[in-house]
Image 1 (cartoon, rainbow, N blue to C red):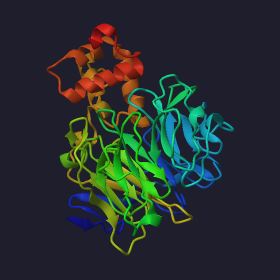
Image 2 (tube, rainbow, N blue to C red):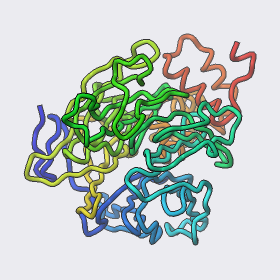
Image 3 (tube, rainbow, N blue to C red):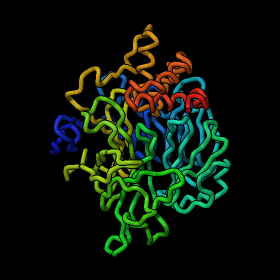
Image 4 (cartoon, one colour):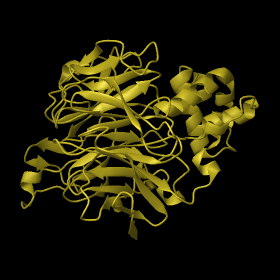
Length: 431
């Protein structure tokens, strides 16, 4: 059952509170949101990227500090690496440097990958993967072709429609992981490094027999995700259709995030939260493993408008304390950032070991903190666990990966750290 939150006018499950973190006068028409390496909310809209700052610690932003006056059309993908920002906008995938740490880009961006940006069906989200590589998702008008497959290992050479690109850690080369998307705006990884996205429907076919709804998809390497042409998507029952985790009817998919924190109740942990711009709702999609994929299920409303409040969510991310931050905007509409908190969460659930580790913690405790999958691909999480992992060295993670007494998810996390930070596993360890 959903209940109305008085401060925001939105409704959420019992026990949750939705508050306004930042109003429209701090950031208008927000297209994209991320959390930087210092744990601050950063938003982008037409002609701006701003850092939202809560100076008095009351849970609401008091100031919007302009990081850069651009890109002109707004960014549709943001990810911090330390104080530098990777951004999908302008000429393509670009980097703004902030070497002096003054929260202001030092100058014009450096372009790593030229690709179409700014349109609603062009390049979208950029994320760091559990393997340390970069992943970029695009819509079906981006015109990605075989020239983007610059590695010998690219699963796809002649893509169709929207794609998922995988780029080396230094962004010098790339491959096409999957194609056949219509217009998936965002994606995320589950704890086992599976890619999940929320793809749009063909809204012009709504009353026709071949109409396919918006769908949460499990994106497989080398997989074709079902979109063939503007008037044809493979139905779910086709043998070569992608694994459909949930079919969600009409809508306009935007942001996606896999909740991997401990603040929310257990039923939401490792669920996929998917945003629908048209109907003003956030869906919670349970991720239940079934063989090599996920059991088809249903999505439930998690946060939505109550009918009197305008709510057009465009993006969402999980903050260091486990709260969910949601931005609204798009097509010139008002911009607001909301914060979703679970009221009954304990201090330990809001501040897991990774974020509350004593400075002089013993190595065993540092290892335990690294193996807790607390939003491990987020910039703020990497800013904590990467230095810890480097200080411990490779050996403890090899031992953890081989330890059959550890939970499977901890052993998988150890392997991910070995791949990301230490060049992978040796032949002997793999055997």
